[in-house]
Image 1 (cartoon, rainbow, N blue to C red):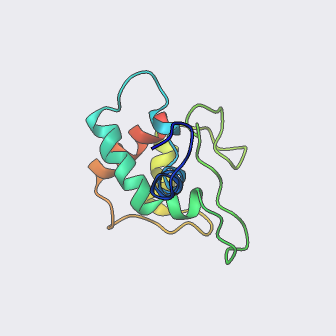
Image 2 (image 1 turned 45 degrees about the vertical axis):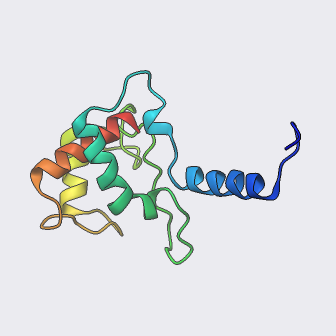
Length: 122
């Protein structure tokens, strides 16, 4: 194999890797320290319950859900009024808000805590 030339399998592998990595942004792991166990569990919960709406465009929705990158690092939640606290985020997760469904009964208190731990890193 010649250096500097992409073979067909190498090109396919590169494209496949790009697609897979684009599906799961690395913003949560860009911090210098590894994720804690709670953050890792929260990341899995985020990918299975939140990612589809908050990180992918959903043309069927009248209003796009807010991006949650650094949501807890801001002074307020995306509504611009509600203080960005863990308790307020927990309330939104558990009881829902506007078009976001409630996750009460679908996530345990421990899972909500893990999700919030991950949102600190997202």
